[in-house]
Length: 165
Image (cartoon, rainbow, N blue to C red; front, side, top):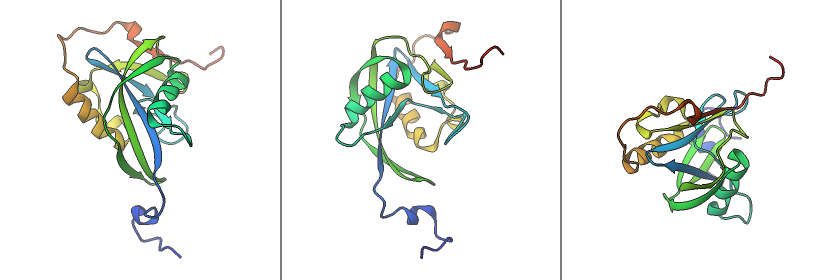
């Protein structure tokens, strides 16, 4: 029997990490972030779009598929950033982040509540899951800010599922 007093990482030390592909969709000096639905894990947190790598699927193919499913867009993978691991209370994960460019479509929150283009320096790390913190830092180092211009209201897309409210 496993002791309930051991830290969570001990519980998962024999469990293989789940592979997750993450799309860092960059346009100029902004990156696309998505607001998770309030229900479920990390509800109400911002995230970089992506999802589970299916059996037999490469992480690169998974990120292209996930961004199509979650945002309704086609992307080109520009650069892999290299995988890293993080353990949450639900278990270990191996994240495969990719810098991507939009090739077709306008991002829409098909799987979340809202999507927004943000400058990396404007991202609040306290509003993202812990594993995203290293991605925010990587983006801040890679994406060079341009002259500051206010984004138009059309730069934010909100999903409204309310019926007749």
